[in-house]
Image 1 (cartoon, rainbow, N blue to C red):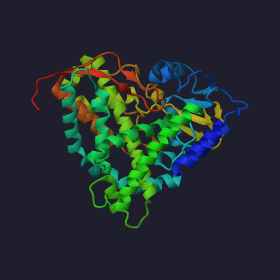
Image 2 (cartoon, one colour):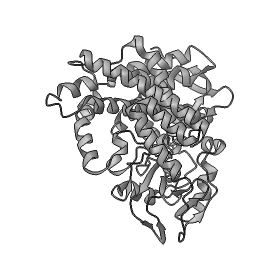
Image 3 (cartoon, helix red, strand yellow):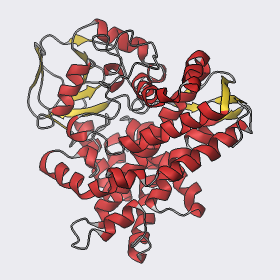
Image 4 (cartoon, rainbow, N blue to C red):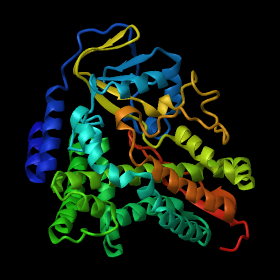
Length: 436
């Protein structure tokens, strides 16, 4: 079978989400060999976000991008790259020209999520779910966040040399999001497995191995879809204090379909779990490498919110998102042609030397308010406050109960070009002797 037939078969087997994947992937296969006739002013680059060593440690490549012009073009990947903070922000704002409708990963896969819609439909979907993200609604989860931080930091303290990714950085957001969505404790292991499979959709490449990964990802999404479809059908979420329960209660008119509620839950899983896991992993990496910085936070807990913002800037859990140019898009003297795939390189933008002094240096008191870790414009992340609450709770618990964070060996970093963080990191925590 040809690659195109593989994609079509995958779509047939996977249902509605698979059909979205099939349409996007076949479109990408068909357009794979279409060259751009010309461009003006863009610098040709070998920077490849899909190269595993580069994805794991991209910062040397970002320095090279910053040393060049405002727009780069990779002919082998056929992507246009924006790396300066002002240009990435402008690109994020220009939703009418740089659209999300082809998906935000390299492959043109666009399930009906908030992140893959623009304009009027995006605004409607955002208004529908806003009640779940009010200040009061989010702060109602603070006691559970604090309880999880106490429990999980204690478990890492009690297991010197354990993998903090498995013991804390994955369970913290997973347990919280599952509880928010109304997933019982007995279903958590399966839910976690489905979620981990689903996130591979962000790293699809047009190859047989890539299609195999996509098949696994869609299977995970389909399992999550079946789970919530059963919950909706049995009425198990109605009247509950969960986010979906609140949305169901406010949806007496039926303005939100079950399908839309599912895709909202799926986005919360993807964005809420993986990005927070990456951020928390970066936290342990930083303070194991910089004990003097951790000491500053231990001595002054008022630094915790600023430290979290600097961690977001420095590690950028989301490294980049893609857009498609509806029409020609001008950046300085460069014209990015219509239909081009454009990478808004958030990881590079957050280390733009024109904005941040010594951008490759972590400064606990920097307070980098310009960072783009949660996106910008219409697609600014709804769950940003929730991620901040989790990170601050964990750091507050560490600063209270832990004297030293030590890495046991080198961490293993993700090679996912979109989501970056440690995927394995053994640590030893030395207790500060503070009773809990």
